[in-house]
Length: 436
Image (cartoon, helix red, strand yellow):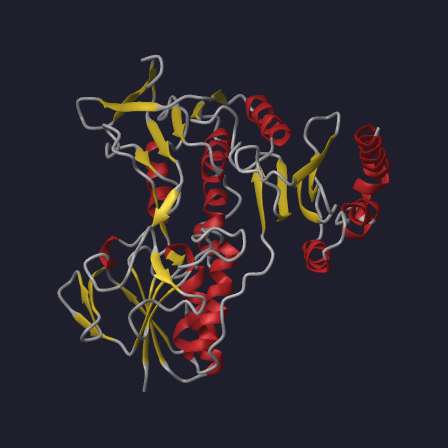
């Protein structure tokens, strides 16, 4: 009987195991050293904020795995011997496989900052990060101030977490405006204001020079690169992005770049070895999509796709149109298709932008300035239906059609009763201004 070993018990690896089990009786082992059981990584912040307990983040009961004959092994993999199809474990054991799937996800970026390994310095990605946060920042009496380094989605989640316990936060963002490598200018500036409205000390165009230690090896302060200012703090959150967690793979014959190189079938250069999720890097990018995508739903889709291939129905990975969602404190964000920020915006891409007077709701619609083809939409504080925009993108609808049928994508009837006319009026005014 084939023995399928999956390294990593995140959404990619667990989805793969579940779907292989639906399709076959193959022996399945999932190896992880992070936790005994699969949990929802995106829910970690809500454990700290008191909305749920950690066990509530586990989608499956503990008996699920044995009942479905999915063996769980809590262990570290030190090395992979692909010639002999053997894993070398940190405890000295060897484990043989017929097919191997690497689904080890990401790790927080570190850029060699002095003091980056002190006690009180952490990312916000693993369960262990949550445990460290409870030790070093249980309340504002223990943690007088936290400094967050890096202005992405994980950074703003950590800011919201600490803010929920009334811990003062200084937020160091290298860019001149929050997430402006992704968001158009109007949206980025609205989020800047929203962060500050939550009493976060947002420092734009600011870099970390070093993290200073007290006499016991704990964080004492940070030093700002540009000014030399010293900011006293007890916790430093390193949230300057993530990178594939593949150090243990680099001594093997498996081809790597930033991630583990795979083709559209999620196959590596070594027969019977695959990679999925955050640690997989497409040899050739799929459309405008990045070669590595650290996104929950693409990890799930890779697991579903690879299960078919491993069980004899070899099919390519096809993620479809880009979409994503996130939350910036009180503002929900959704994106469908492509809406580029000012840095990466193609010459042909034009934008229509509307913002409500309350400064917490806006949309940006991207379209081709020559053909008027609808390219994508960002929404803030407004809920839209994924399937509607997915269909319009596939049908290559023009921007006029989309703007005049927005109510079909409406996920919140109250929103369009109040604002649809304002949005259409602003759009038509913009067209008249452009045409004149």
